[in-house]
Length: 76
Image (tube, rainbow, N blue to C red; front, side):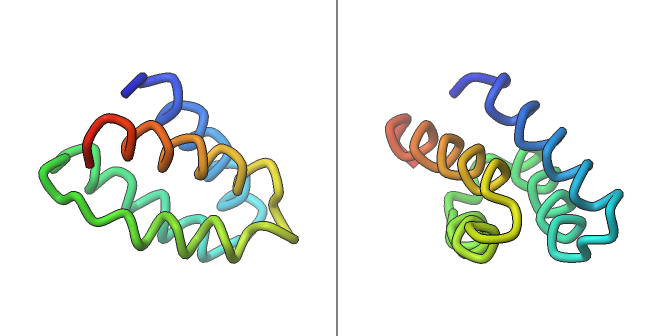
């Protein structure tokens, strides 16, 4: 899994959180926990967030899906 995907997701989440999106802030915090503990292999939180963002934050949703796909391909 490339750190580039996590960095891009982190940037997009930070931008959305800065605009007042509380959901993006919560997912940003969860991403930090996931990076600290990659043994936590549940990606449900990220899948759910990507679905919620499809209409309001399509770029953020696309980046989240990239991360999900890369993690899944990597065996998580």
